[in-house]
Image 1 (cartoon, helix red, strand yellow):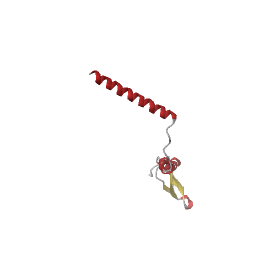
Image 2 (cartoon, rainbow, N blue to C red; image 1 turned 135 degrees about the horizontal axis):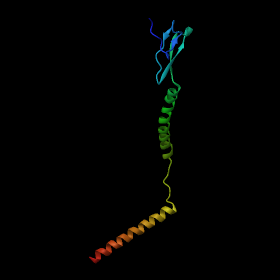
Image 3 (spheres, rainbow, N blue to C red; image 1 turned 180 degrees about the vertical axis):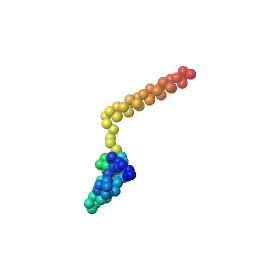
Image 4 (cartoon, one colour; image 1 turned 90 degrees about the vertical axis):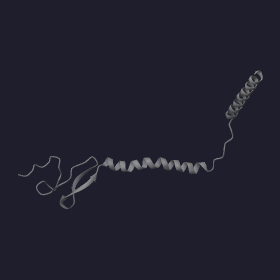
Length: 111
């Protein structure tokens, strides 16, 4: 009595004459190849190949872009002059500081 062949098993070239290929996995599968299709050939699934290519690109490209921008853009920058809004903000802050000092000095005199 011979064992019944597995339903999903691949035999190269046929069940009675050939070899049984290993079972498929999540990452790979096998096909018959070679002279007279007598050998089992390993193949990676397409999504695995795409991920092997895409993941390194997605990880390396942003880091490379960041480093290049830091190197190329930071070397020639000169400090910019404060805008009108910045000057107004500085004057307001200076005015608030002087008011605080006056209040503090008035409190000290009253004591």
